[in-house]
Image 1: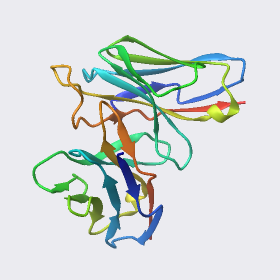
Image 2 (image 1 turned 90 degrees about the horizontal axis):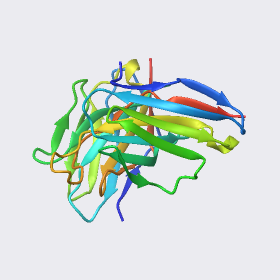
Image 3 (image 1 turned 180 degrees about the vertical axis):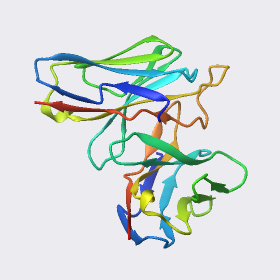
Image 4 (image 1 turned 180 degrees about the horizontal axis):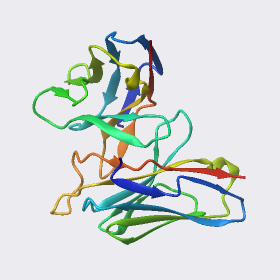
Length: 112
Length: 119
């Protein structure tokens, strides 16, 4: 069975501090991994994706994630967060057909 | 601004009402999805349409009835809902491979959802 585990349900940090949101997955086949972000009262937006190739993927707003096959992880990092990064973050694994398996989500709260 | 448009943004309905949720995209995507999201939870897949044909129904109760009139539109017809059906309903779309094979790595584009309250 394929599954996604987000290890922290809530992560509070101060503005300009670094942050890591942890995601582990379980899959017996090749994986395609995604991070989505959901701001209050909005739908989900794709933050970044890993399909193949370089294990370090970056987004346009300073986030990056590293695919680690041996540790079955796809952690999301940002060296310096802003108040505007406050949101719910979902790690997701593409499974068979058109299905995505989501983690339970991590609420990132950036405090001044 | 999202490229997937959902209407209405908010809907309050009684348990005997019939209503419809609408979704539209003009990105040429041939896969469209309905998800249900409860507060503080990840989205749960309900239905998938591929090339305007229903390809996945995740054992959703028949009081939810999807419809895909064309490649740009997706509806969700609601009838005799229960209070526990109150949630955020999200529509999404994605590309499909030209050879009609399984989707591989195509990200989902979500709308902002319809906040449904059943009284």
